[in-house]
Length: 476
Image 1 (cartoon, rainbow, N blue to C red):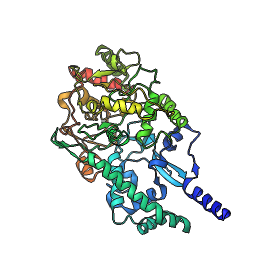
Image 2 (image 1 turned 30 degrees about the vertical axis):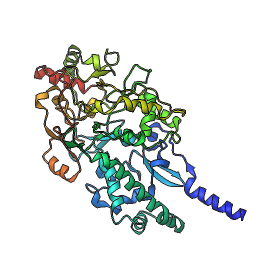
Image 3 (image 1 turned 60 degrees about the horizontal axis):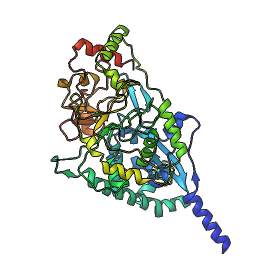
Image 4 (image 1 turned 45 degrees about the vertical axis):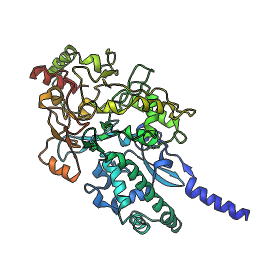
């Protein structure tokens, strides 16, 4: 009997709890595919995850599986931003690169270039999440249907088939539907205070902290809106506590706490997080170079733009050593006055609860705070980070400098570079049709949280100085 119990115990450990860690020697590869420790908590059985586009193609915006949602493949079986870690069975989960990798192209039909550490301008995070939920709710998501789809992608042993049929498929379906019910309760809610529902995130955007407030911290659901553009994380300044503010609203001034809390936001727990792996990512962020502008630059015009940049005071906010660099600029400052929904989302109560959340663990927090402004960030690689402002409401640098010309509606998610206005194409002729299919996003600045007013610095410059300034921005 002892021998039998031992065999059963060994089998159970091997098939359900054996942990094979995922780490890569190369820092870029580790950023793209390494584990942040969330597979045990929020990972999906990898074979199920792989089979879902085949099982439920009608819930995707187009062909190509997960690529139609903006995930980037480079010849591997999984896209950048997905780690596969065996904890008993292979599990797929997102990592930091999921929200921090993008592509750029010279024109339609041109090859793409992958940018690591970027703001994932083509990724539809909400679309990805809703696809998982829709597939889990689909009548085809049954043990028979899922196992058949798994088999179309490869062999499955008899023992593993029984595990998937009897345990993993039903459990995955329950977990995804539970997550759907919990999140859509606030994501899809009508907000009487603004007379509107929360805006869709769209390509390149995410609601990073309301899920933390309502889920992880168990704070009451409120009517705040925190949808924001994803941020580039290249050339991040190392934190000297209190010197620099991080996130759009500066809600934390420790890069270490930002890295650890981001891992928690992606599904890691205080007990499963691996501080050494997160420290690798933190170091990677401080060393990853911003991409250089890949096209010709008019040197004389750029030099004129540099003089305009200095004269207009841009360096005070956006250059290392500037008096306001990576500090929080009050949203009510006359020339700022950008959409304030994001700063009002993160409350003093949320900061207090988060600072207590991981007490007694290796990642104890104490630097969360509530602010009433937005951070003056670096402009490194700015040519590749459009649309602009914290909510991604301004399509190009030209529109940023010309507030009266900012479009009320435009399109996000294209990766073709706009070399004249600097940013990405936002008004292509086929954009409305692509948006209708869900392959890119229609952005309406009239929706709450999507406002494009404010940041009027430089608006008074004459056209030739604006063009010179934009040329200089290409050199950053």
